[in-house]
Length: 463
Image (tube, rainbow, N blue to C red):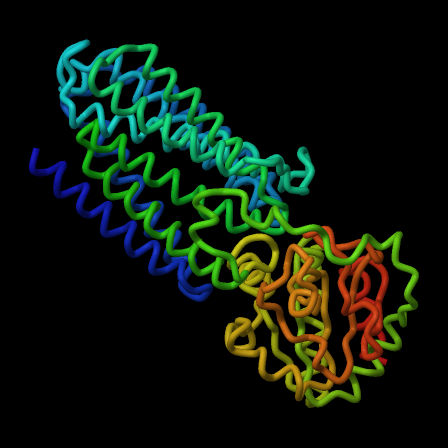
């Protein structure tokens, strides 16, 4: 089967090129093409293997899954991508559990021994893949629920939760060892059920503000689950793909943790971000005055500005305001202003979310800068235009130790001479805390739909 090994190698190279391409918006399209090509090669190679004796169920699965995937891809909106990713992670984890169960009950079909006499190495791979897959499944379901608003974003904490998690982790380890010794079905299903419970207990205590990191970490878990099952199936492509997903997901999680000032170990163990209370209260409890204006006021300020920084966020994505925003920026440039975009690492609940939306509107990549590249420039900027970004601009992250976002690096928007903040209302951000920036003397609130506000500002600038 040298041809299969060569084909899997080509698929693996395509996956590596895909990851490389996806590391930058300018090369992301080619990265997607490499990924699709690699997956097509891997699937076709696997189907053509001589040990595949029946194609009916395989074809049925491809057709059903392909139709579902195509429908979702057509209907999904950009703002729902984070929860879609979480939902897909759950399916990867559940698939790992199903494959492990099939291998355990019919080991001869996978050439790993006979029932009751499975090789110990295969049992270890099988049990680890099962445990990680089951944790990924329930953890991803919870993450999906929190992002979708099915569950509340508030952390669910209780006394002794870390001790309980530690005890369940040790019990799971003991069950894995026992399973490798006795190979009893009840032990296998005990591992599955206990792992389901651990997945719930790890993610429920995590607040909504930290969900982006959780989704990234669950992505890593799904990769390692696939890798473990790849060893059980002796499938090189699955091992390599799982390892790539696991490693890249872990690296991305580390980068995001650094961007949010979180500990990677707390992400792995669960429950981070859940001990703190809640900083500032919700909008209804805050009667401090704010300055508000309209599109004419915003246009006047920006016409006088020599430098403008635009900070896009989730609100821009919801309103699909990126095209109107680009038109506004082009008018400001034609008026002689320097216009740039500032992107926070977790803006829009997913790394790269804002970059994709701006690329969709044909914004020049050279104008889009990350937090560490532009943060020092806010103090010398005339006007900052914040459109839908909330928690990532909140100065409370620097000063309020009781806030759940305390310590998270933020964009230094408050240092600019004037801040224009587009928002529908005074409601708090996803972290559930009020943004102190709203009440600063240099901030003017622009209440309304983000897309319509940008369109009205464009009209005012053209007059």
